[in-house]
Image (cartoon, rainbow, N blue to C red; front, side, top):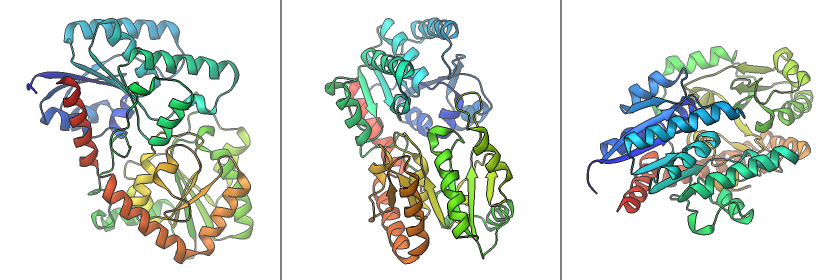
Length: 386
């Protein structure tokens, strides 16, 4: 492969570049690609450019349905592609995928890749479901390659006939970016920061801590989690729930009673955001992930790499990582009674869940090291351009 092949990577907002793909653009740049990043503006942009050491252009895409703004962004992308003449356009996130793939197809870019890391339509009904289905099919029809980031998500796309099977490919065993095992390791932690995390949650050795990391929105199963925790708290007064993540009141607000319970219940500890989640994973006793839809959740890799017992919902993505009663505990999606029972099992069987956590950690270290994912992706790129 010649050293001047141009690769454009696009996400709707810079948060995705910062937290979903860290290090990946820099790696591709170091291995023979000229990399250009595109996203909207945002607070993470400065650190993204500094860390990836690649060019970046701002296209003010939104995560909402904004037809006129979307049209302006589409025109802006077409102009960029005509000027840059990329060999590959690779998009992530729904809006960037739709606009990026349409623009790349219009401009005749030969290799057009869209990574699917979760499908919002999985939790929608009625008009919104039909609209989301239409936009996904339009994105996939404009792409030459569709890369679901898990095998179960690939199976769903194939079963729903959203894309031809010939376009579908899962890179390696799945995952968008793998996991940095040098970072997510107990041996890499600093004692001072461990103490800071304990201070932030008011740590007491007499309590047990149930941790959930993710946006505080209905799609992440927060409503069911709060209801289940209220029941658990009655039986286990020593139990505490740590929620690490921000509200998204404009996009997917929680019901008022659930938000009020989070803020008023002294056994629920809300940490609005944390860049170094590994410290909360270290001080917690159990990890719970009740999300309704995922592609291949990084946070399960992170919890598993830190040796934390995992309890998660039975959905695409989660089931690619966790095997029930072998490497973790799985409850039926949105089933509060099943969630309650699995947390109870985790609390009552510390030796068993510790063994499962050790098995999950071993699987993650063998299969999902970040550098291995990057190498698989690089080989796929080279195969396509050649």
